[in-house]
Length: 359
Length: 129
Image 1 (cartoon, rainbow over the protein chains, first blue to last red):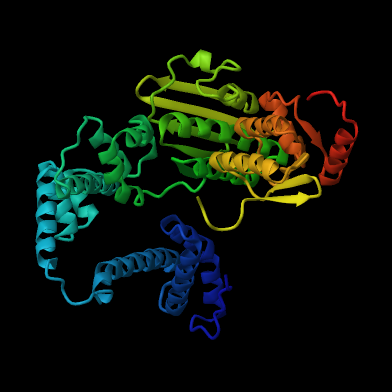
Image 2 (cartoon, each protein chain N blue to C red):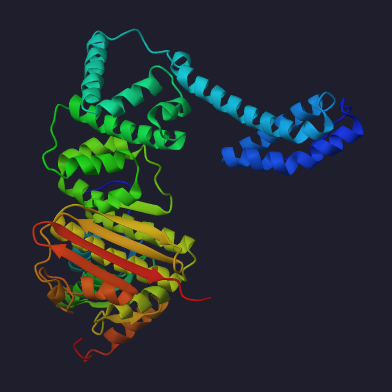
């Protein structure tokens, strides 16, 4: 964050003082367009340099509008550069070994898959997408044609791309989704829309549907995952230890006392063991909570046989194997909030929360 | 089952065995620990066992039950078991969980544990635990 030092600027002292007065304005304009503070700072510096250089030529009263336009231009040209770099990146990294014999065939199949996937979009979606991606038409002129706004067109394009990814995967794997729920779930994952994923209960579906679990793998990496959630896949005994250590780490980071951390780890251990014992596989998701208070939320999910009588399973001493029968009731005592939802044949979800005590 | 660093060790100290757990164990590792230990009680003709659980991050229902079972099995094999090193937070969690831990002999640390064994074996008509 170096201060602007207009050394020997042609505008003279008077000009540089005017320019200095514009700094907050320029900062605001750039910051509203560029989220990354370091980049934004660079752009502010560049704008000010340009404005300083031109200060002598611009009429005094016009310096502010000039600075505004310059700031916008600087941001736009950065975007354009980034865009160009992205578009030409493949030329730079194209250092692949000589063509494999099947490469041509694979490429052709790939093209066919994309073409096929494109036909599955609606006409309007396809036309807009092609105009933007292939002809290079920008969202603003598209918006003018469609009688919409640039933002709405961009959002629409994002949804279309998400659909195209899903359709492409389905085509290239030559499969039709086995259930009606598959497509909405894949779509929600592809677009990285967490609210929608919750609405369609995507996590549960992925446990149930092997095809979607496999197809969603390349999609999952796309949506930016929230870094305040830790997900542990549970299959074996060792995962029980991994899950409780993940919970321990999150709880420690949240500032829980060591006693509370151990309580949480013990509860996680109990419910995760139930997954291994009864359902073969499932997952544990540990999430940080900030509202209404700081706390930790743990969701343990499986697609196992389910619990026929949840109330009974929550009784002390009820055990279907040779355990102490403390799993669920014990975990409930250790946490502040505890809920079990189970459906026979579909699986069980245990949700539990512990809030941070005061102080 | 797995290579890598040892997860627990069972050492002989006179007529006693000292079993230390080095890291958080999962369920199958705990079961293996139990089997190894009960076997060693026979092969070493041990009269007493101290189990050091200071390295266990949690003692959940399965771990507690395994320790209780070890105590019971050792008793049937003619040895007294003392568990040492339960961390304060772990103890708190065990009570909150509702564990019934009454029958297991415990001591604060290894030294206390060995002293406990000495006194148990010095007084032969000890109450059957």
